[in-house]
Amino acid sequence: MDLGIQGRVAVITGASRGLGREAALALAVEGCKVAICARGEEKLRQTVEELETQGTEAIGVVADVTQESDLEHFYSQTVAAFGKVDIIVNNAGGGAGAPNLTEVNIDDLKLAFERNLWPALRLTKLVLPGMRERRWGRIINISSIYGREYGGGIGYMMAKAAMIAMTKHLGIQLAGENVLANSIAPGSISHAGGNWERFQQNQPPEVVQEFIRRNLPVGRFGWPEPVGAMVAFLASERADLVTATAITVDGGQSRSLI
Image (cartoon, rainbow, N blue to C red):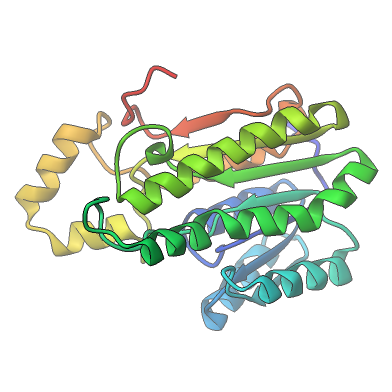
């Protein structure tokens, strides 16, 4: 299926590994020019080289998304290289602080929002004027099933739920301008260097197997490729009636009916 995004320009945060890397690769395969950012220079360079093997143009910018100036630099470098931004994938994020409200402090909650929500909002506000002017844009926010239902630490859950709410609002607001906004809610996805890989390495085998038995109907942890494929679809011309929604990619892990 031709997704119709050959030559489009995509930016992806936190894209040197894991879900961000897979999203970048999926878009590169479809012929997008790709700009990625991450904090680690060496891994970032390796991922750019990997993207270039797909025959696309790619750049990598070292950036800490919690720093507004770094996001502005990432955006300006992308425009300098490719002239515009058509697709944005807000992927960077992470947990912070104690898991329970009775134990967490306010600074930890602020940090959870600084890692997960504010960077997505800031970068979206940078790219949005150009999307609206050209009447074409795709905003894809990587949330979590724990933004849709109970699970994870309190700060992470609150921030990811707020990301889904932000995406819903944007999608409805911009639908008439052909700027579509959706969120993807992955389940427990294992990838190199990720939290679920560490969980499997650090916990006794019986603990890991019990977690799988209780939570993962497919009988194993998830993997990044289906998330990347969903990103590519939502970025495409084929998804032009899909906006303001949260799509789970979790192998049946979540329990919510909506």
